[in-house]
Every structure is written in structure tokens, then in C-alpha cells.
Amino acid sequence: MSSGRGITLTVPASFSTSSAHFQIKKIDDSAALASTSVPIGRASVGTYTYELHAVTDTFEVIEQFEEPITLTLAYGADDVEGIVETSLRIYRWNESAWTALSDCSVNTNAKTVTCSTDHFSTFGLFGEEEDVPEASTSSSSKRTGTSVTARVRNLVSIGKPEAAEQLKSQWPTLFPDVTSTSTTLSIRDLELRMEGEDVRMLQTLLIEQAKGLEAQELGRVGATGYFGPYTQKALSEYQRLSGILPAAGYFGPITRTQMTSVGIGWW
Image 1 (cartoon, rainbow, N blue to C red):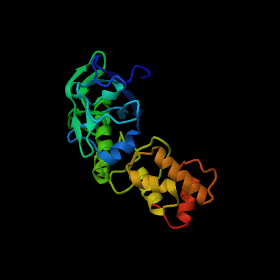
Image 2 (spheres, helix red, strand yellow):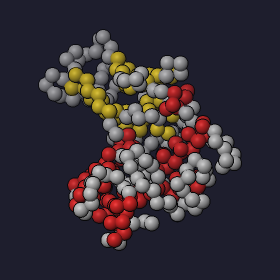
Image 3 (spheres, rainbow, N blue to C red):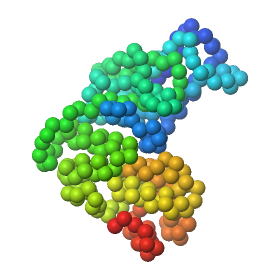
């Protein structure tokens, strides 16, 4: 855990397998949610997605615990803007769906969520979004804006980019890169950690071109609309194989011109 945020395990003193080793791995949220989506009616909170494993000294995986282990996730105030804080729950991915853990409690003062589990898997933090009141598009409320942004992010993550663009077009002051219609996009330069329909279109092009192994990896994750490490690596690979220098994984005028010259693009 760093900066007061992260995950903590509390193992009961009477834990039956005293030789167990616990492994915690923080995983890329965009990749995880691209393959699992989000629980119905919930929004992803922060970047708190972890894979947890328990193994014995002989490297045998412990599938189930006789006594529950307690998980505590510490989050920041900025993570829950636009989220009903008391609704926060830790969810476990059971290979087919997200399931809320039992006995969860939220400490809004300490900014922690504590739940128990008798299985290890992939875990994430989710909560209910606050209702977005009907208001004029000139509203600049930080709370409302964050909630709209979260809705757009979740629509993109579950493969509904058209719905995301329609919502964004209703809030032009929050999404100045989008025009009043959801089918017209401005031509932005794109880089790591950006989001939008133009990112999704770039990802689609990279996947379709299938220039190499990194493009195949991006194809496995899918066109999520979030410019993460998979997109950066696939773009850098495309640039390198197309003779574009520098091959830095940044989408700007040079790469746009090259793609136009070979007849690909969305602009």
C-alpha cells in the first residue's frame, strides 16, 4: 500500500494452513474490465483491481479457506466523487461474473472498505453512481461532471461506444473534443491515459492492421476506448514496422499522415 491507498489482508490466527504464502498482484484496470465488464448498476472506483493467490510451500494452490480472510481496500476522496460512498463494495470475479463479498463495511472517515472472502481470485472496488440531475449543458459542477465521466467510461468498457458518445454530446463543456453529433469526431493527438471514441477508433485500426504480436495482444483486450499500455505498445509496433520515427507510441501528425497515405483512418 502507498499514499494511504491499496489493499491489506488480515489472516486469522487460527488459519488452518500455517505454511501458506499470499500473493497480491495489482493488475491493469482497463484490461481487466475490458474482459469482465462491470457489475450491473455499478461503476468502477479508482484503480483498485487485484489478483490474489494463496499457495503452500509445495506451490499447491489453496482453492478455499476454512475460515474467511479479511480484505481492506483504502481509497481516496477523489476516487468517490460522483459515487454513493456508502454503496462501496469489494467484488470477486468468479470466472463468469462479479460477486459482491459478504459482511462488507464502509468507513467513510478512514476511507476504507472491509469485506471477507473464503476464495481468492480477481477483486475490484465498485459503487453506485449518484443520480445526475437534469441540468443545462453549461453546468460546471465538479460532482455532476465526475459522475457523467464515470458513466461514459463504463459505457465504453462494456462495449457501447455509441451510447457513450451520445451521452458525451449532451455535455459539450465536459467533453470539448466531441461535436454535437455522436458520429463526428475531432482529430486529436492521442497518448497514454486518454479516453474517447477516437481512441477506440485508433485501437480498431491497429487491431485490423495486425502488424505484429502487440497488435494481437491489443486485439485480445479489445477496443476499449482507453489509451493504456496495450494501445501504446501496439501503436509503437505499427510505427516501427511502418518506418515511422520516432516509434514512441504517440499518435500525432506524422502517424496520421502515414495512415492517410495508405488509405486507412477515421477522419
